[in-house]
Length: 482
Image 1: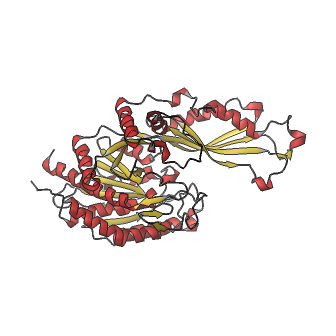
Image 2: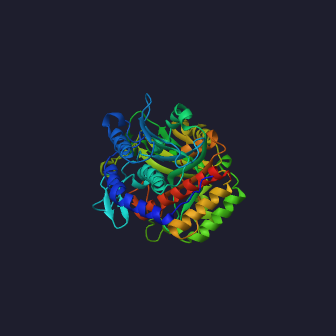
Image 3: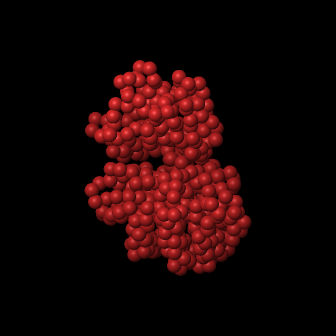
């Protein structure tokens, strides 16, 4: 039997130096690449930004001193690229199963509203924050994953075989990922632990692990009423407005006064253990549940019960309108009854609701019996199933707690997330026996997808250390036969 030891202080020193001297400069270069996800850059192949990002990250990985590591930058025909890294077991760890560490390198679009001097492709370091698109969501993942493994090898601590998988279309729904997982199935092999670095945290003071993720059904809803625009004074009162018809359609699925989704089948019963976690999270965060958002003066959240607000964010369906077509800018809007209006819908679904079913329910509600016989269409771009974590094994729960104590000096916390990571649902089905550690650095005000997104550097370092500790404890369990 191997004596597996892990020196947290030594790991912390190694990680700190690696981040300061190597990772931060690489992230600065990565943020400068506008490698938007294919949904937001349909000509991404010709633009070449995704290829540049892959070259940068794969090149960095190849240059690292990791025993036996093999780095592949793959691209299946007609697919987005993927970085696949294999690392054999070290120091007596198991080669029979693997730890799968996941992240992505594609980015959300620019978004308006960045502070002066900042921008999506303009990396700016202010104190402990690195501003720019994609650093926290999720460019740091490959750096954190490999640095955690290097920290173990630097002190001779065993780890099992590891696979690092970095995809390039997560922000578009991970539609290429199943093909890669199937293509690489033999090389991935049996997976006993999944570490995902693409989630959030309730604060920057302790490790936060995600226990559920909402799904999503979304796409473009279009209403057409005329073949061309006409004088609004002539037509209004006779020709129904496409915007008003859209309002009527949206009222079928959402209560305009409360935001509640009106389709009963889109609601699920919240499991008792998740309800208890929600209550603990609401107590721990207090008003930070809502105060982390940049409300305008006088604005209030959708209620005062913090537990209910967390449930709204993590276990209940909710609709957002994220874009529109057919509406001219105010400065050039004439007196015209427009021929059509289109909205981009983003409907978050409860973690345990099948995404395909959610999309079908949305289509059924919006497309039947169109008002006035208008031409109504819904192009579904996403229909992703959420994820509810399996019961956590005692060894992993203990390892997560110990890692949080090691690198934060506080206990770990668990929470559901309101966003979607489609890969987790896929992995849950493919590896039903696997354990999951889903964590991340997207905390208060980090504003993923929005203006002024930033990576909290100390959080990135601490999460890297926590991953190292958990991977070490996974090896200890395998060696000891626990």
